[in-house]
Amino acid sequence: MQQMMIFLAGVNGLIAVAAGAFGAHGLRAKLTHEALVVFETAARYHMYHALALAALAGLAGNASSRLFHASAVSFQCGIILFCGSLYAMALSRMEWKWLGPITPIGGLFFLIGWLCFALAGVSRAANAIPPA
Image (cartoon, rainbow, N blue to C red; front, top):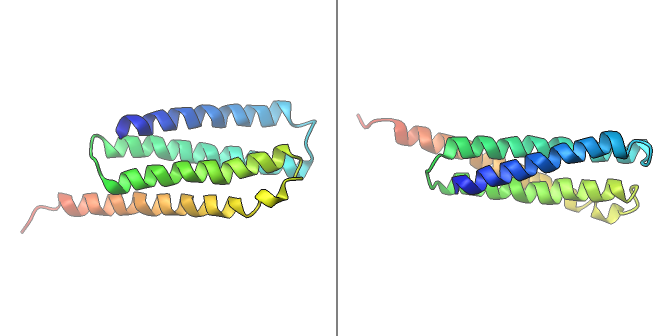
């Protein structure tokens, strides 16, 4: 699982940097200010969660914690739904507003991922306390 988290972190980091550069240099003259802000939000959250996947990989080590796994899956689903829907809406020049309801579902996946991350830390700490 750790190798998959590292792979996802790397691929998502690469895509987030490419999207950020594309937004800053390739889209600035082509999109409205509103669409550009939406695109930049997608790229920013994409990078945040690529970094979160990298942190997960480092913290999970070779442990096969279901919570670390659930966190990674949730982050990846959030990236696809939240960032993907924002990228698509921005690139459509905000004409595909029907994608708007998908964005909060992706945000919910991000929240679930962070909750699982936190619970994994609590679980790991509880297991590390030696019995009295």
